[in-house]
Length: 96
Image 1 (spheres, one colour):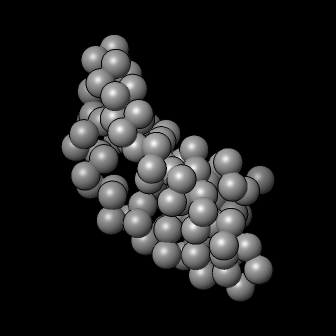
Image 2: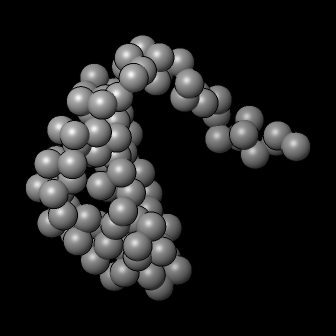
């Protein structure tokens, strides 16, 4: 859980095109809040907070890597957006 949530921050910053990064940042932060409650209720809140804190501390390196990754991308932001699954969570849970 720790490594997944720490690395999620770096993945989001490094690989998300700028227009989508700013568009989805509020949702990303809302998921942080939900995760804090979710893991807190299961006794894993401290690990979750440590993962996010370590993820934030590693953001300078992720921003440096972002320059290289974004310079080499081949899809436009619009193309990336068209590939995202924007169905609701309930719809995704019902899929076979």
